[in-house]
Image 1 (cartoon, helix red, strand yellow):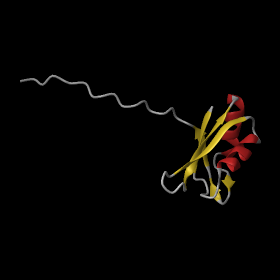
Image 2 (image 1 turned 120 degrees about the vertical axis):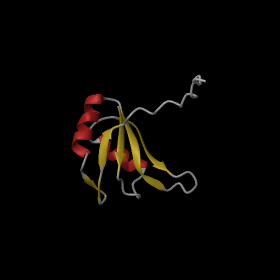
Image 3 (image 1 turned 90 degrees about the horizontal axis):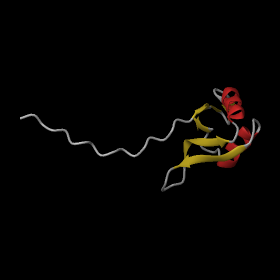
Image 4 (image 1 turned 45 degrees about the vertical axis):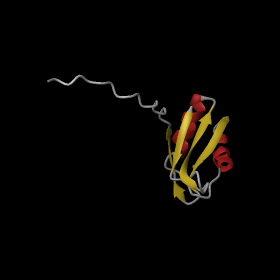
Length: 94
């Protein structure tokens, strides 16, 4: 399951994110989203956990928790929107 984690302290790194979620089960990946040019954290990230039940336990335990001086938001990640399809041409009434 893919998990969205927001309101992170800007000092938090991917390794830290992996460590806190590993307390609830196997973490496949953990990554902090950064700005392209500066590589500065945007304050959110994603954690992928192998087991859905463990992921749900982590979400329940960590959503609203105080971590590194911030109250974090932890939710199931929404699927990425597909690339927008070109608009269909609509005939114009004359």
